[in-house]
Image 1 (cartoon, rainbow over the protein chains, first blue to last red):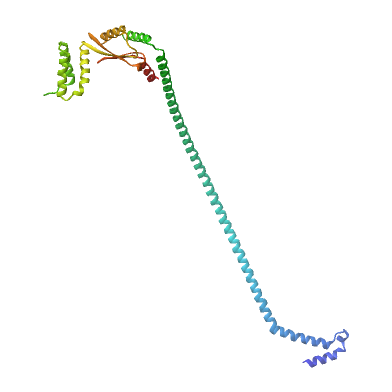
Image 2 (image 1 turned 90 degrees about the vertical axis):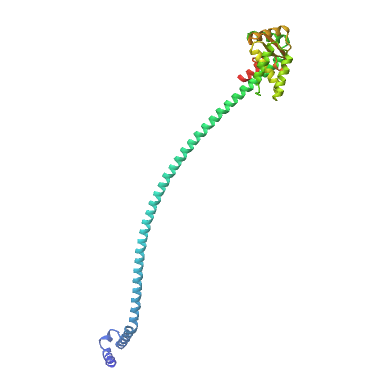
Length: 177
Length: 130
């Protein structure tokens, strides 16, 4: 088959194709070489290459699927996390509000108790003050009485002579009668 | 034998004295009774009871007069007259006691009565009132 082709090429080289500046022999040779290479490639290279590419495509597709799944999972997780976060925030708000309410109640109770205790302490202090004032008043009266009596006694002892004492006794007897 | 009370003994002694029995004789009898009834330590109390009995009967009063200075005769007479009238007795025996603590005035004590007109008493009253 090659020979008639080369012969045909030789015959035709001097005719139309040669006039175009193309070497027919070389062209045929290159064509044959190309076909051989093409056959070799189709037989041994292309299948492996295609298989490898297919395998890579599948891997890539799987990766993309996996990535999509991961993204979906992530979105779901984010959504769920958002819900959980919102619920937790609501719960925390409720707990905070309850804590505020309880704290206000405790403060109110504490203020009330403190107020009552303060009033009681003031009342007790006033009572003690009154008692102390009464005691001091009593002591002062006692000391004043003692002072008056002792001073009078000293003056009388100095001033009262026998003659005046007799007059005093006479006066006393008149009062008794 | 029933033991006579001190009041009964005093009444007996008063009766005997008013019957003009001798004081020494009556005193011996009473002493014998007290010793016999183991009450010799009550002689002082019995004497006071007799004085109280005599005063109650209007016979005599033993007046203890306490003053800061010695009393004049005039004052003694006035006191005796006062006690006679107040205690309603015929006779008054005055025992004079000088006690400077009374400061002034006079305190008269009999077996049944007491009158305190001393300055010390008045000062005590002032202390108690104030």
